[in-house]
Figure: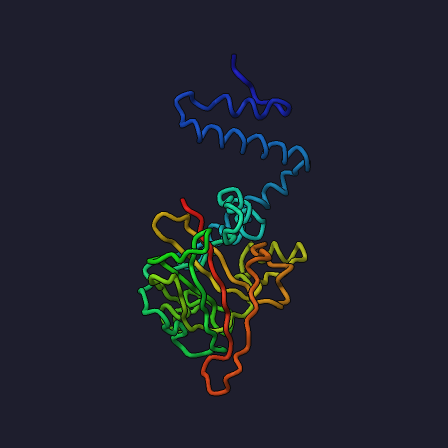
Amino acid sequence: MTEYFTETGSVEAVTARVSPQADARLAEVMASLVKHLHAFVKDVTLTEAEWEIAIDFLTRTGQMCSDTRQEFILLSDVLGVSMLVDAVNNRKPAGSTPSTVFGPFHVDGVPEREMGANISLDGVGEPCLFQGRVVDLDGHPIAGATVDVWSDNADGFYDVQQPDTQPQHNNRGVFRTGDDGRYWFTGIKPVSYPIPDDGPVGQMLGQLGRHPYRPAHMHFLISAPGFARLITHTFVAGDSYLESDAVFGVKAPLIVNFVATEDAESAVRWRADYDFVLPPT
């Protein structure tokens, strides 16, 4: 029997059109999407003018995207969707290092550096030694783990945001642990920064009375054969935005005390110690 579209039967009318030959997972996801989207429209009694504003917002969000900027990722982040997707896909055993959002500023193809190298290519910022170990759930070191790191510069911008002023791969590096599982490198103490807020997502935050800031953090992507890949940050303890991160990425175990070094002759002014615990795949 043909399902004609009615307000009360809107979901059934749409889902009935899906072919039995369609991919089962796609059909399942789309049926749920239609169900919740239609329920939302009915719940708020969405007006035609509001729907036109929504279409315009999504259009401008797409137009803002480029090779170095992903406005839809920002939208997902500030709505908490990125963290929710991360949570349901990274349910790990107790003792594992928590994951958090990937963010839009990771770069593939960063050259592997010698352990201990300085990733601050412009030399601007407060030098910080990052060190620790990559271990399994029993505390045994993981050799051959790839430690991919990146952070903003002293002004709160990533190199891809300032290709004309920052050196390529500034504050980025890839390292590989030895038999002791240790990693160490010099970067800068990260600073808090606003996510790009000159586009539709920033305008939405402003209208909601929300700020666009992220607390200071260093990104880590750690992988090793036989272990679950880890995407996470370490956050600077005491940062004023820890409890109001624009993208909801902060987790208490990831907050790290950045300790001021006592050696006046050392070029390093801060030290951040953190061990990463990977569960098996």
